[in-house]
Length: 273
Image 1 (tube, rainbow, N blue to C red):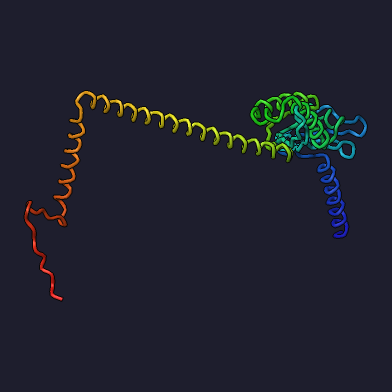
Image 2 (cartoon, rainbow, N blue to C red):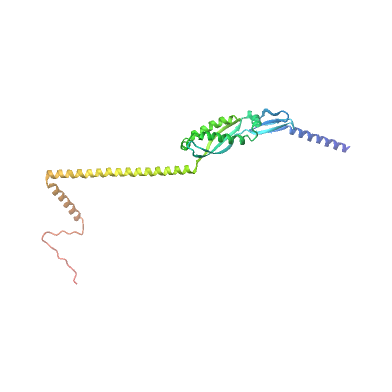
């Protein structure tokens, strides 16, 4: 009797295990920010896109393909040429995600690795096309315009593959060694030219100052000559008196100077030998 009970329990447990396995294989989960496309062995990829949550499928007949529909970053480096034939190294940073309604078509025509197949090729194509419209100097001075043009063209191109670009930006822009050296030499030449211009302007100012000083001396001499012609030697005598007065004032303040009345002398008491 006990053996029959155990056998019954074992069969019941086996049945539950089989039923649980079947139920478990008939369920699949879609995480937040993801979508699922169902592949049917008999009917192919279904047009229905499953959202987040738990869903049913037919075991061994249907299989879910999960896609991450959140924005994902990708850096694409490209080496191309400018309008004036300068080598340009550009790195483009892209935030992309698939259009959820077009996931069946993306999986059918491109595959799960759609970003690896599509983004590098269309990014290289658009960058080469846009950069070729600008010369090297414009790429530096009009970087915002270049970035905007790349973003517009690339967004339009990616839409044909069912991709949405949330952000497109130029993160790296450099030129070849020859162009970089030429820019540095140009900057040095400009600095030398500015220095030479400053020296020339300084010399011009010094020349003007010398001319003004000479004109002042000439005018002073002319005024003195006019004064002498008008008052004779009186002006010279006045200047002599003024100079003598100044000398006397300076000597009076000195302790090493002694005044003796006219016609008198002093005896110096010298120590005996």
